[in-house]
Image (cartoon, rainbow, N blue to C red; front, side, top):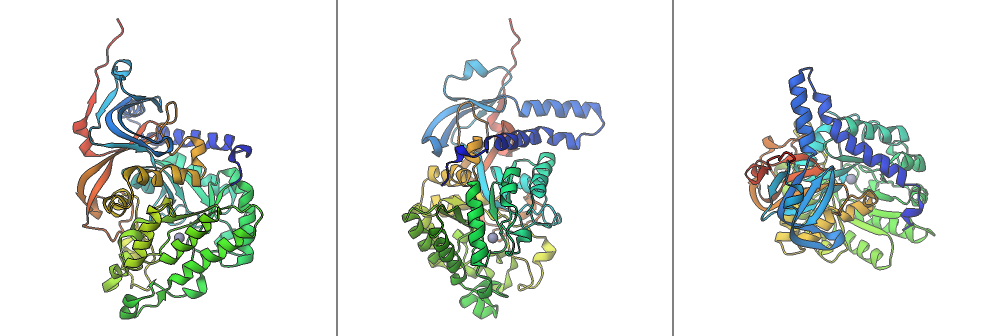
Length: 498
Ligand SMILES: [Zn+2]
């Protein structure tokens, strides 16, 4: 991995961070009416939201610094002011106190793989609605994929995403830019310029770069930026017209199948290409679905190649049986596979082969999902349910601990996308306060009608879930607060100076 410090990234990152923080402060301005009283109220709420919070008695888990203990955290002026105890005196005036007994305080969750659908598919999702869903799910940063219309394949479009996020986002938004022009897999895009404009990684997600020659050139270009290339691993000629996993269910339903091999061949090929590059770029295999893929990544990592793998909640919990009765809500790319794949994916997470968790949040309208199975678009929404679903599949199953789960959702994706250099993905004194307060025991039932994202295409409707984000802070701004938090919150009296 090229040393990040030598790259001229600091300024860009600083700009990015300032832009993201500015966005959160200006969000309310977009909705201000001319009513002065309402404006005054909003201004006060805004300063309160960015005010002082004392989070008492949470189990603070910061995998980056190996912190895992019950303590108090004070947040003021957008930053973590102190971690420890004895903060009662210093910050009591006018602070909001949160009794976090029994809760986990984690660095703000980071999703390296979302589709916000803007520009071009605003009927499915927008940056405003998608980041609202992110905040509710406990996410403070998301990396959005470039399969928009037009595709994010120029520096101007990278900047457009930052500009739109500044106007409407509830969390930090970092664009992942296309590796090839128009995501067509033919001509290499302006990778260096897009990197300078703020692209945090590169991907043609939604499609695979099928040509080994083009892939090799893209790897070489991405290597010069120090960023990662994120591959959507799907050999296209093996999956033409396929709408679900090639197995007994597809045979019974008379649907053409998407074999595991189509994923494995691409990862195998890419690893081989990387081995032949003098200084390979970092390589990230997105949304793994097949047991064989885990084996290929395990071997590559053992050989010291800069390869990472990602898994989604649905690939850890659902099999192709979910597509029965032509259930389009379970139609996703890559497809849901079999129990043996789930077992291998969980083992891959447990033994450190898979180090990144992503949602592949892929909103589609109800009209689109009500088409016949073969015509319906692939994908499901994930931001509002990822935390409890990962907790169920990985922690409740005994595969990993809460601290490891939090690492996979914070510092690991932060490192993948260079966000750790912005101070994201960890909790440190003096560092920007992106934090997620989690109730690991909260029990709830998923009701799509209660979801805040624009599209509700989830196969998990009606599922009993355990665990949820009860508060989300971005740069010290409260971007989401669960009703359950009200009983735990008290406003300290403001004392006047003697
Ligand atoms: Zn994909």
